[in-house]
Length: 208
Image (cartoon, rainbow, N blue to C red):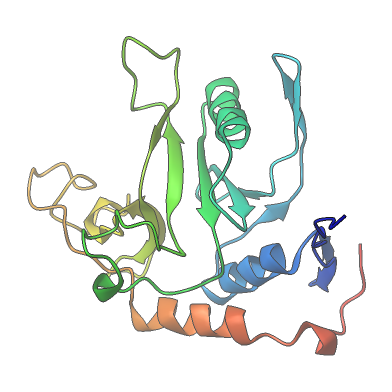
Protein backbone atom coordinates (compact mmCIF):
# COMPACT_ATOMS: atom_id res chain seq x y z
CA UNK A 1 0.00 0.00 0.00
CA UNK A 2 1.34 3.38 -0.97
CA UNK A 3 1.66 5.93 1.77
CA UNK A 4 1.74 9.66 1.17
CA UNK A 5 5.00 11.22 2.25
CA UNK A 6 4.88 14.33 4.40
CA UNK A 7 7.32 17.07 3.44
CA UNK A 8 8.71 18.65 6.58
CA UNK A 9 9.58 22.34 6.65
CA UNK A 10 13.25 23.07 7.27
CA UNK A 11 14.10 24.99 10.44
CA UNK A 12 16.26 27.91 9.32
CA UNK A 13 18.46 30.22 11.37
CA UNK A 14 18.66 33.84 10.28
CA UNK A 15 19.60 36.98 12.22
CA UNK A 16 19.43 35.24 15.57
CA UNK A 17 16.00 33.70 14.97
CA UNK A 18 15.22 30.04 14.38
CA UNK A 19 12.42 30.12 11.85
CA UNK A 20 10.09 27.15 11.53
CA UNK A 21 10.50 27.14 7.77
CA UNK A 22 12.85 28.48 5.13
CA UNK A 23 9.86 30.25 3.58
CA UNK A 24 9.40 32.34 6.72
CA UNK A 25 13.13 33.07 6.78
CA UNK A 26 13.08 34.29 3.17
CA UNK A 27 10.31 36.74 3.97
CA UNK A 28 12.37 37.93 6.94
CA UNK A 29 15.25 38.63 4.53
CA UNK A 30 12.81 40.53 2.31
CA UNK A 31 11.62 42.69 5.20
CA UNK A 32 15.19 43.41 6.27
CA UNK A 33 15.98 44.51 2.71
CA UNK A 34 13.15 47.08 2.77
CA UNK A 35 13.88 48.14 6.38
CA UNK A 36 10.59 46.89 7.80
CA UNK A 37 11.05 45.90 11.45
CA UNK A 38 9.52 42.62 12.57
CA UNK A 39 9.07 40.53 15.70
CA UNK A 40 8.99 36.78 15.05
CA UNK A 41 6.54 34.72 17.13
CA UNK A 42 6.63 37.44 19.76
CA UNK A 43 3.31 36.87 21.51
CA UNK A 44 0.73 34.09 21.57
CA UNK A 45 -3.02 34.53 21.94
CA UNK A 46 -5.94 32.40 23.10
CA UNK A 47 -9.51 33.25 22.18
CA UNK A 48 -12.73 31.27 21.77
CA UNK A 49 -10.81 28.15 22.77
CA UNK A 50 -8.26 28.69 19.99
CA UNK A 51 -4.52 29.06 20.68
CA UNK A 52 -2.68 31.12 18.09
CA UNK A 53 0.94 32.20 17.70
CA UNK A 54 1.22 34.63 14.74
CA UNK A 55 4.37 34.42 12.61
CA UNK A 56 5.26 38.11 12.54
CA UNK A 57 4.24 41.36 14.14
CA UNK A 58 5.34 44.50 12.28
CA UNK A 59 5.54 47.26 14.94
CA UNK A 60 5.95 50.22 12.57
CA UNK A 61 2.97 49.08 10.49
CA UNK A 62 1.00 47.89 13.55
CA UNK A 63 -0.15 44.67 11.89
CA UNK A 64 0.34 40.91 11.95
CA UNK A 65 1.73 38.89 9.06
CA UNK A 66 1.20 35.17 8.51
CA UNK A 67 3.25 33.21 5.97
CA UNK A 68 1.76 30.17 4.21
CA UNK A 69 3.17 27.91 1.48
CA UNK A 70 -0.29 27.45 -0.06
CA UNK A 71 -3.69 29.13 0.15
CA UNK A 72 -4.90 29.20 3.76
CA UNK A 73 -7.51 26.77 4.99
CA UNK A 74 -10.84 27.91 6.41
CA UNK A 75 -9.45 27.29 9.89
CA UNK A 76 -6.37 29.44 9.21
CA UNK A 77 -8.49 32.26 7.84
CA UNK A 78 -10.78 32.05 10.87
CA UNK A 79 -7.80 32.32 13.23
CA UNK A 80 -6.68 35.47 11.40
CA UNK A 81 -10.17 36.93 11.71
CA UNK A 82 -10.27 36.18 15.46
CA UNK A 83 -6.84 37.76 15.92
CA UNK A 84 -8.02 40.91 14.16
CA UNK A 85 -11.25 41.08 16.13
CA UNK A 86 -9.54 40.65 19.49
CA UNK A 87 -6.56 42.96 18.88
CA UNK A 88 -8.06 45.57 16.55
CA UNK A 89 -5.05 45.19 14.25
CA UNK A 90 -4.92 44.16 10.60
CA UNK A 91 -3.81 40.61 9.86
CA UNK A 92 -2.35 39.69 6.47
CA UNK A 93 -1.89 36.15 5.20
CA UNK A 94 0.90 36.08 2.65
CA UNK A 95 1.11 33.05 0.37
CA UNK A 96 4.14 31.62 -1.39
CA UNK A 97 7.73 32.58 -2.11
CA UNK A 98 8.98 36.17 -2.30
CA UNK A 99 8.20 37.08 -5.90
CA UNK A 100 7.56 40.45 -7.50
CA UNK A 101 4.04 40.58 -8.99
CA UNK A 102 3.71 41.21 -12.71
CA UNK A 103 0.56 42.39 -14.46
CA UNK A 104 1.22 39.99 -17.31
CA UNK A 105 0.83 37.03 -14.94
CA UNK A 106 -2.83 37.70 -14.25
CA UNK A 107 -5.55 37.69 -16.94
CA UNK A 108 -7.89 39.56 -14.57
CA UNK A 109 -5.43 41.83 -12.80
CA UNK A 110 -4.71 40.18 -9.39
CA UNK A 111 -7.60 37.77 -9.30
CA UNK A 112 -6.14 34.81 -11.14
CA UNK A 113 -5.41 31.57 -9.29
CA UNK A 114 -1.70 31.47 -10.13
CA UNK A 115 -0.56 34.35 -7.96
CA UNK A 116 2.42 33.61 -5.73
CA UNK A 117 1.98 36.89 -3.92
CA UNK A 118 -1.61 37.32 -2.87
CA UNK A 119 -2.82 38.08 0.62
CA UNK A 120 -5.95 38.25 2.67
CA UNK A 121 -6.52 41.26 4.93
CA UNK A 122 -8.78 40.96 7.94
CA UNK A 123 -9.51 44.64 8.44
CA UNK A 124 -11.88 46.13 11.02
CA UNK A 125 -12.81 48.85 8.52
CA UNK A 126 -14.66 46.21 6.46
CA UNK A 127 -17.66 45.68 8.76
CA UNK A 128 -21.08 44.50 7.68
CA UNK A 129 -24.28 43.21 9.26
CA UNK A 130 -23.13 39.61 8.99
CA UNK A 131 -19.86 39.88 10.84
CA UNK A 132 -18.88 40.89 14.36
CA UNK A 133 -15.73 42.65 13.27
CA UNK A 134 -13.10 41.43 10.80
CA UNK A 135 -13.91 40.58 7.21
CA UNK A 136 -11.67 39.01 4.59
CA UNK A 137 -10.49 41.07 1.64
CA UNK A 138 -7.92 40.51 -1.11
CA UNK A 139 -5.50 40.97 -2.88
CA UNK A 140 -2.93 43.02 -0.98
CA UNK A 141 0.64 43.68 -2.11
CA UNK A 142 3.77 45.29 -0.75
CA UNK A 143 4.21 48.73 -2.28
CA UNK A 144 6.35 51.85 -1.87
CA UNK A 145 5.42 55.52 -1.87
CA UNK A 146 7.24 56.96 -4.91
CA UNK A 147 7.70 60.30 -3.12
CA UNK A 148 8.96 59.49 0.39
CA UNK A 149 9.82 55.78 0.07
CA UNK A 150 7.52 54.60 2.86
CA UNK A 151 6.60 50.92 2.59
CA UNK A 152 3.04 49.67 2.93
CA UNK A 153 0.78 46.70 2.28
CA UNK A 154 -2.13 47.99 0.23
CA UNK A 155 -4.94 46.70 -1.97
CA UNK A 156 -3.53 45.88 -5.42
CA UNK A 157 -0.30 47.59 -4.39
CA UNK A 158 -1.86 51.07 -4.66
CA UNK A 159 0.89 53.24 -3.22
CA UNK A 160 -1.36 56.29 -2.98
CA UNK A 161 -3.13 54.55 -0.08
CA UNK A 162 0.00 54.41 2.09
CA UNK A 163 -0.55 56.59 5.15
CA UNK A 164 2.32 59.01 4.57
CA UNK A 165 0.43 62.16 3.47
CA UNK A 166 2.38 62.33 0.19
CA UNK A 167 -0.31 61.21 -2.24
CA UNK A 168 -3.47 62.59 -3.77
CA UNK A 169 -5.79 59.73 -2.80
CA UNK A 170 -7.16 58.07 0.31
CA UNK A 171 -4.09 58.70 2.47
CA UNK A 172 -4.15 62.47 1.96
CA UNK A 173 -7.92 62.90 2.26
CA UNK A 174 -8.02 65.09 -0.85
CA UNK A 175 -10.36 62.78 -2.73
CA UNK A 176 -8.09 62.20 -5.71
CA UNK A 177 -6.99 59.09 -7.55
CA UNK A 178 -5.75 56.26 -5.34
CA UNK A 179 -4.48 53.93 -8.06
CA UNK A 180 -0.81 54.75 -8.40
CA UNK A 181 0.51 51.19 -8.41
CA UNK A 182 4.06 50.89 -7.13
CA UNK A 183 4.43 47.24 -6.20
CA UNK A 184 7.47 46.77 -8.45
CA UNK A 185 9.71 49.69 -7.50
CA UNK A 186 13.48 49.08 -7.87
CA UNK A 187 13.77 48.82 -4.09
CA UNK A 188 11.08 46.15 -3.84
CA UNK A 189 12.41 44.21 -6.83
CA UNK A 190 15.88 44.22 -5.24
CA UNK A 191 14.41 42.95 -1.95
CA UNK A 192 12.55 40.11 -3.70
CA UNK A 193 15.75 39.09 -5.45
CA UNK A 194 17.74 39.25 -2.21
CA UNK A 195 15.20 37.07 -0.40
CA UNK A 196 15.06 34.40 -3.08
CA UNK A 197 18.84 34.30 -3.52
CA UNK A 198 19.91 34.37 0.14
CA UNK A 199 22.31 31.54 1.09
CA UNK A 200 21.31 30.56 4.61
CA UNK A 201 24.07 27.98 4.95
CA UNK A 202 26.51 30.90 4.98
CA UNK A 203 24.70 32.64 7.82
CA UNK A 204 26.94 33.28 10.80
CA UNK A 205 24.29 34.34 13.31
CA UNK A 206 23.53 32.19 16.34
CA UNK A 207 20.07 30.91 17.15
CA UNK A 208 18.16 32.66 19.90
